[in-house]
Amino acid sequence: MFQKQLRNAKGDEGNVNLTPLIDVSLVLVVMLMLATPLAFESSIAVNRSEAQAKSARQEKQVEFVELKVVSEDSVRVNREIVARASLRRTLEPLLTDSSRRAVVVTCAQGVSHGAFVDVLDVAKLSGAGEIAVMGR
Image 1 (spheres, rainbow, N blue to C red):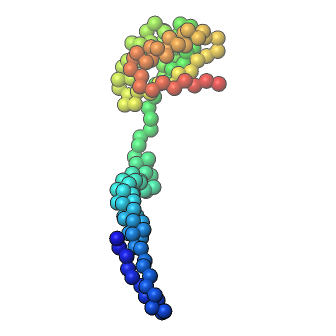
Image 2: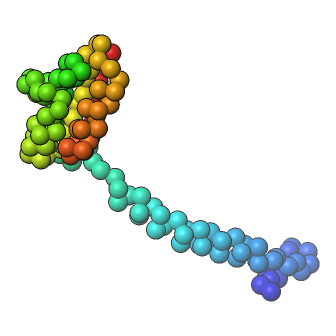
């Protein structure tokens, strides 16, 4: 299709086929057209370290409710000992006032597994968003 005739020093005519060169050029153009939007898309999510440092400084300290299962019948809620039967009434006001609604639960030795799981269930039903279990 695209051919150019050349004459060398002896006067012989030769043909150069330009079709492969044009095909490769078009493939490169198409690849660049496809890759360019991807390059712009990935650069949008790049955060500078200065901006991250400012946002880290502005975050306030995380507030959480601390629960410790002291015995089968009692639970310590933020330094106040409460009967396990009235745990839900004590927790609900604390978790609705808290912005993050995080609860940290620990358990004393000798407390049954059932009592511990019951405290976890009551915390979840009272509105805890995150529950962290601390152990040894």
